[in-house]
Image (tube, rainbow, N blue to C red; front, side, top):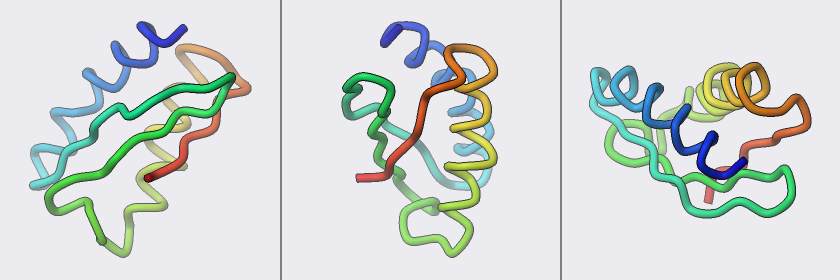
Amino acid sequence: MEEKVKEILSKIRPQLQADGGDIEFVSMQDSEVKVKLKGACHGCPGAQMTLKMGVERALKQHVDESITVVSV
């Protein structure tokens, strides 16, 4: 499942990079995916919305409905 998560993150990455940000996979334990937001995304007021409505939603849709995304 971890490889599928990384694959989906690599598909999301260009959208974040277009806005001056980036995302890095940190780890995965059970269904919790830990990521690090970088660049313009780090500290952005909309970062939590990006994680939940963008990244987490894509992972739930394409990998597993039980996935949660946590920023570290």
